[in-house]
Image (cartoon, rainbow, N blue to C red; front, side, top):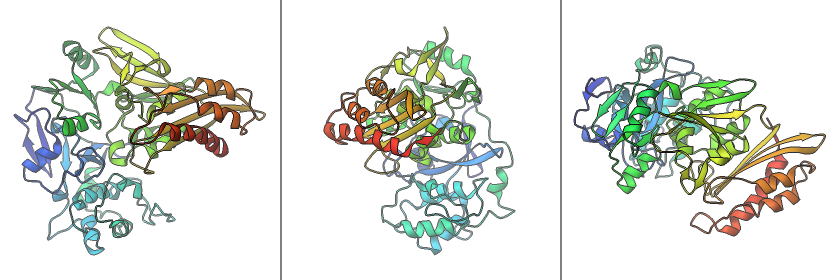
Length: 467
């Protein structure tokens, strides 16, 4: 197997001898590329943002912004990365760098390289096109949500927005735009001490059977935090983010199936509205930087009671396809969680796919209660799916997060809703306020969580989004 390497700003550099836990950010800075910074070390500030050449949905390659502080550099073996230094030079600024400079968007400059890389990813978005401006979209088609994972410590957002909205289309001879017309680098099998990227699913399952305590990573948006803030040093890390068997997305009359390693950004693009409840969730799921790496398999695999995907998938009555060297099985998501960060998944077993049965609920809604509107952890998450015939609820499914040791189905409320007139759900909302076992913690009190459960159902019923 060839020695690992990484192409950075057009130059291929060996990764021989790099420890398995080394993040891309640490490696870049040790290599002299110090534009990317460590601010939070957990993917919330974006000061570490870089561009990675990833397969696109409408073009062979798409420049994708990622948090370099979370990704193991060995996970980028064989890939192409562009940092702020690779976009332009002091004598020949990239258009994004130029607009940030002339419009005062740099402020103190600490976060600027990260903003520049996230902004460049949106600058090169293949389907960005001029249109009617809105508060969050420029006349040039720039979507400000592309910067949702970048934090400016100088409160300089207006000039940053002005810089974003001033960007024209890339020039015809723009090399990075031209790069998107050629295929992205293929996934490179990697096998070094402490880190492996198997070539396919059978190889991954064999490796997990050999190392049942291995840490499995895709986007590394959770594992990277453990490495940075808690000093986790796993004996074996297995990267499954590029396994072809985990990247399928299909929609039939019977089921919607989503591969466990499809990033959340890809899920939104590839489903293209086929699952309306996911469309309500994904814009509120962390930030674009995180969604560019995070996966449904990873969010469910952690078993966190505040993972936002679980309540939505519970409301969709989803199931998980689990696979190991011994074979494959399907488990209802409602039966998957067994305790705090525990599940029925056994050692050596992977989540291969998420399955959503068709037809989906006729009316859906999702409410996330958090201190910030975007890029924050939920205090409470409520997802609702109902079928209504002649004004009467005939079926209801409700998923809850943040109110118990695991994500749960609100079974009592579902029963209370069936037969009720929609949207007159006050009685069912009172039942919902008693579901789960919410706790007092630094995010919210138990009383607040119960109040938000009740209010969420009332709010969703008032909005009633057609599926």
